[in-house]
Length: 209
Image (tube, rainbow, N blue to C red; front, side):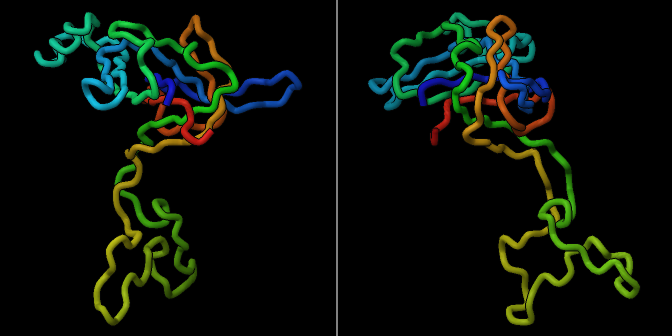
């Protein structure tokens, strides 16, 4: 990985390219992020930088967290994320990473937490087929039906069952950066990304591009 940044999902909109094609994009407020820690191969065994995003109130932080930021000379931040880099020799503690780290046309991977939908059934959670919507089935049209067999008389592990749906970390690969607004720290990425509005996302250059 060569670069990465922390951002906040603003929402979706659409923009037009040079020939008038409509492009659906997600707007992300990316940065400014501050380098709170730098790790090197000599000291830690790998190259990485730890970025902080969004100012936090000191009363909401623990003393070790405040000491960590004070050592770096950075104000307390709400969100910390470590990005492993191929080479971080040009980056120092206290540096500011902004949206113009990326450019239009770059391919990126975006990681976020999906919307939490609570406890849901198999039809919504796994797109199961519904039971017959006719007489004799009773009020169980959205139930999964038979789940096991006679021998062994149990349900196997990993069977798709009702349960918690959403609120999990998901990464979408190979998305295209359509536009950068460096003054407002905005990045427009083609397509949808995980999470609700105002959700925190992590953007890095694509590993498969």
